[in-house]
Image 1: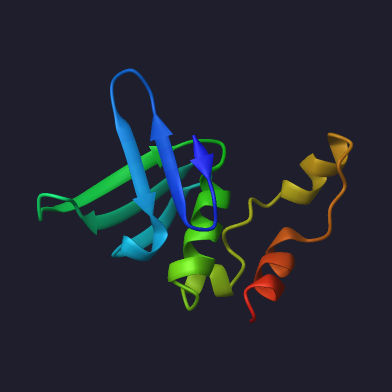
Image 2: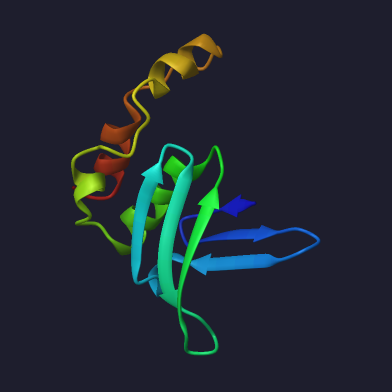
Length: 108
């Protein structure tokens, strides 16, 4: 899986998923590890996809900052797992509060 400010790309032997953030109709973080989005696919059909990954919060934040800057969960900082900063510190990678950094970087 590849995450950028423009998209999420996932591929394995069975399927491929390429989500360009600006092409999405909606996004939500339905669980700490589940990112859900809807969009109109290349055949014109409305499609909803759930992606389960440890990077779901990051995918949500990147999509929201890029295409949904007024999303309530982004603005409320509700996308950051409650113990994120503590887990980073335990892993030897202390960080400043991630939610505040994301909002500062998006111009909010």
